Amino acid sequence: MSKIDIASLTKEELKKEILELGEKSFRADQVYAWLHERLVDSFAEMTNLSKELREKLEAKFVIAPMEEVGRQISQKDGTQKFIFKLADGNIIESVLMIYDYGNSVCISSQAGCRMGCSFCASTIGGLNRSLKPSEMLRQIYKIQKITNKRVSNVVVMGTGEPLDNYDNLVRFIHMLTDEDGLNISGRNVTVSTCGLVPEMKKLARENLTITLALSLHGATQEKRQELMPIARKYEIHEVIDACNYYFEKTKRRVTFEYALVKDVNDTPEDIRELTKILKKTKGHLNIIPVNPVKERNFERPEPKNALSFKNKLEKNGINVTIRRERGTDIDGACGQLRRRYIESIEEE
Ligand code: SAH
Image 1 (cartoon, protein in one colour):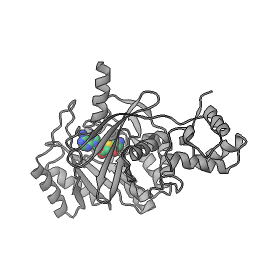
Image 2 (image 1 turned 120 degrees about the horizontal axis):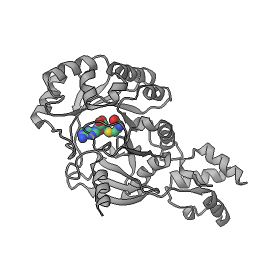
Image 3 (image 1 turned 180 degrees about the vertical axis):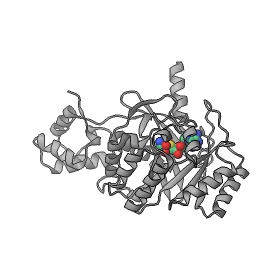
């Protein structure tokens, strides 16, 4: 029988397991605190438990290891990109960004991705598998331990489509925001989706206080469909309706992300259509000049053109910002460090 992944269990589930071992329930509180507050990597470190109990735990459970196999540190702004190897050899990427308001970690929700967005490096090799709650949490725990910096914000914007791993994502958020874990405020957590409509609506009903970000990238059905295959399944109007539903239910404003690509979605026509569609929402637009991916043929617009794109939208009454770039000196685009790492080991 394979061992249970202990750090994916909620407090209640852990309690049940510990009672089944014939132990008192306060032992579950202790174990939970070791795992999610003190962030240990092994049962041996749980020093207030008897050796006998630690052995019992060891026999039934596993704390899935995650090894740092690569890291890049930006000399410009202190951004750090981590490459982690999971227990089964899968490779994932996570990023630490230092801001005035705190330290933010961008995590991956899957090893690879099956959404196929045309400008994105993470989807090139397809989906290997979804991450377990413990593997999403562990990226944050590892970074906090390695750098000794307290993480205050989490964005699920790394490799993968979080809503394609729905149950594990929701469990992860509950554990991340639990007062007996890192106790990060739900308001400081953002989940980004390419627009899986049924899951967006379901998420709206979970009673969470997190922010939802929608990857819009095109302002019309035709444009969006060119860049994002998933748009064929869920039409732009359905997606916008799901965003409005999210706002109604949670009172949290949705963020719309827009990777600005030269001559693709940066024309006056795009400004008109974007204005039209965003006027139907209460959200905020975040422009990301596209990170060129070597396997793809997309260019970013000149900075002055990106600025003028933004200013014109602003004049039209749209609430818009250009995303401040971090770590531009360390492997530009999202998912590229992971790809490069995988390529380098395949060559060996
Ligand atoms: N699957 C989720 C989260 C992953 S990526 C989603 O689609 O939202 C986080 C954001 O980075 C998304 O908006 C994604 O479209 C964007 N992105 C991916 N590749 C990019 C690139 N090369 N340049 C700029 N943004 C990119």
